[in-house]
Length: 413
Image (spheres, rainbow, N blue to C red):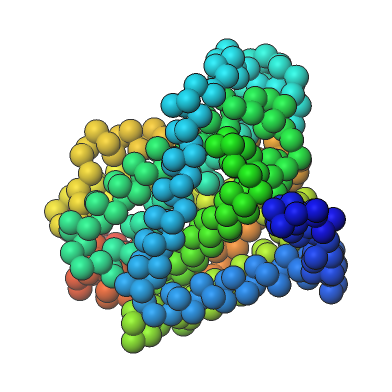
């Protein structure tokens, strides 16, 4: 469809059908597909190649250190979030919200069903399954604290980073889902383009009565948002690997940083592991498998972190902290840790994989031999001096007492 006028021709070119017609080979190309026993099917296809290129670009940006990465992330966030916020509040201000879509809500009778169910055990399970995946996407702002060692003033900047990141997430994770549910309703939310994400840009454009040009602009913004999310995840996870190595938990080779302070070996390790996950997640079924299984590890990690708060407060109350949380907040966080366990137990199987919970546990347990090798083989059963210094235990260790020291204590009783 070349179009009878320039305007119509431009609309045809920018339409999703036009893009599909121009890129059939790219969209359908696949090099190889193979099954990973008991897990999923891996695909080396166009999605995999595009994802790998994006990760390499992000790697190059992060190689310059946190200052350069933060600058890129700041501008990406402004470019993406400001229009998204305006589109999110537009239906609210113009009265386009259908309040019947956001009141008297009940769970569906089954996953992806538009039929209203009831708050039965099955309904609550679906609800908790939704919260289980929502935890994966919403808790991610906690990666703001991964950069503490690279901040100019950790005591001031750590609190500001985590507080305002959380505040921003609260705003966007309320406004956007509320607007989508209020405008689209059950039928719209279950449309294939919304479920798989390909129609989100068009839905956003329709909320502000935008045409094909606005739709394509918003699709570009969605790609930039994806780029921002990948950058945040890669930066946070690589620094977690780096710090785990510095503290004596993970392999020694991960504790290297380049002249810009970027943990390059951890970044390469993270990149290689992400390539494996990308191969599995390159189709829709594999994507949800990776999401459901990886979230098991994330919830476990989150549970341990939240409980580590009160343990560290009891064991080392004298240690100066970049920011000291109030005691009541430590208690609330401990309670929320067990709420997350509820999400994990009830929600992991909702996403179509009956073995997702157990596969997640197995992958999480793989860290045990890794730690055993580092701690007992490489470090001789002792934690690095830097880790002990952070705990205020300079010149001491966390080893079990030797038999000689036990005998000495018994002799003096």
